[in-house]
Image (cartoon, rainbow, N blue to C red; front, top):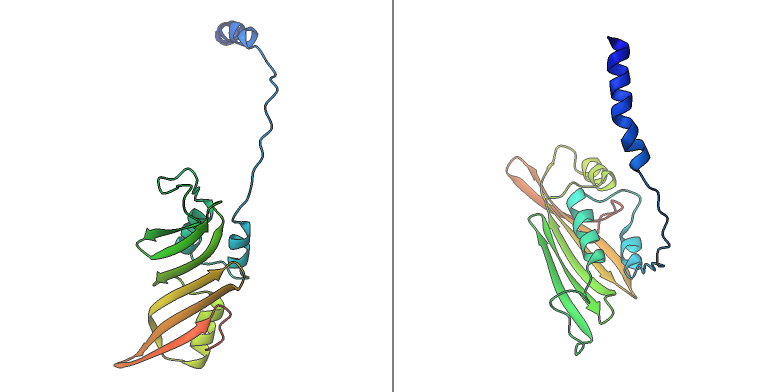
Length: 169
């Protein structure tokens, strides 16, 4: 019985094996341009950013201005806004789709370890109740990252500013 089932399966697959035809085709050359790699490289840090932040920043970098509904040959630069529930980015693009500058604001995102540890070391017993992550990118000036953190200890409230490395400003 086993031999009969194996033989039937083998004979059933035999025509399918001979029916496959392998063709090779020459494909045209594809050239990829990473127009906004400087933006993404300048935002990279030792500690990864929160997932919503990275997601929206990648969306901004991958935005194809020339194929969007906003594109017209008349303008030298474009300002496009990107929104998610956790934050927003206002990006300025030149006529070629390259990012000139951005202003980014994210609320209540996961703090990096360096910021979290700096707050815990300096303010033991305090709890982070709110945080705002601000990023300013400029093509020539670089990037600045700031965290505005609201701390609570009972009925006391304290607001502090830190950079992305955990240094108090």
